[in-house]
Image (spheres, rainbow, N blue to C red):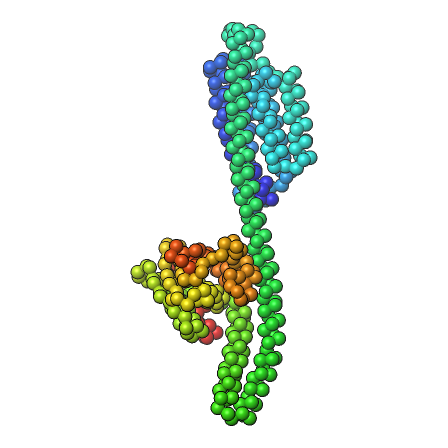
Length: 429
C-alpha cells in the first residue's frame, strides 16, 4: 500500500536522527561523564541499526509493496535494538528508556489495533525486564566518585534531554505523517470527483446518442415532406418559408453528422499554432453568430506557441464564446497570452456578471446562469479542457461583466512527427 511505503520511508529518516542523537550521547557519556560501558558492544548495536536502515532504504526502491506486517516487523526490530542499547547503558535507570515509546507511537498512528496492542505488550515487557536485568553504567568500584545529589541531578538532566528528543522526534514524525495523509486524501478526493464527472459524462453521452438517433427519422421525414411542399406550392411567400424550413432542417442534419464524426475522431489530435487556432475558431464562430462582435488582442509579440487541438477542444472554446455573446450585445474583448509553459485565453463580456448564488457551482452539470439552457455547456467545456490538461475559470471583471479565463498547456516540443495526426497525412491514410 502507498501509505505503508510512505510510513516506512519516514521511519528511515527518523532512524537517522536517532542514530545521530544516540551516538552523540554515548560519546558524551564516555568522555564527559566517564561512564563504564562496553564501547564495542554499543557500537555493534548502533551499527546493526544503521545496517537495517540502509537495507530498508534500498528495499523501498524496489517494486515490492510494503505490507502492514512488514512495517510491524521493522518497528519490532527498532524496539529490540533500543532495548539492547538501554540494557547496555543502565537499563531502567537510563533516562532515555522512553525511546521504547517511539515504536509504540508509530504503531498507534499507522497500524491496526491488533498490531498496536501487540507492540504495547512488547515494550512493556522490555521495560519490565530492564528494571531487573541491565549493565550498570557506574559500577560501585569506580575511581569516579559521585555524590547522591550529583547522580540525581545527572539523571534529571538526562531525563530532560530524553524528553526533548522524544518530543522532537514524535512531533516531526507525526507532522510528516499527517502531511502524507492529507496528500493521500486530496488524491482520493480528486479521483472521486473525476469518477463522478466521468459517470456524468457517460450518462450525458448516452442520452445525446439516443436523442441523435431518434432525431434522424423525423428530420428525414420533414425533409421529404418539405420537398413535396416545394413542388406543390408555387406562391413566392410560401416558397420562401419552405426554403427557410429546408435550410433549418438541413442544418440540423449536418449538425448530427458532425457530432457523429466528432465522436469517431475523438482521439485524433492536431498540433497547431494557438494564433492560427484562434483565427480559424473566430472565423467559424462568425458564420454561426454573424451578429456577434469582438476585439482581439495578442499580448505577446513573435510566433505563437503550439498546442494539441481536437474537435472537442474547438467546440469547448466555441461554447465559451457563445456564453459570452449571450451575456451582452456589446463587443467581446478577447486576449491571447502565453508564458513558458501555458497559453492563456481571456474573454471579457459586458454582461451582468456572475450571480453569487451560483458562482460556486459553475462547471457542474445542469447549473446555468441563464434564464434558458440546460446548464451542460460549461460542464462539457470544463471536462474537455481537463482532458487536455487545461482549465477554465470565471471571474467578475473590475470594469463590469464576466472574465472567462482559459489555461491550456503548450505542446511539448519533442513530440515525434509520426505521432502527430494532421489533416494532410490523415487524407493520405
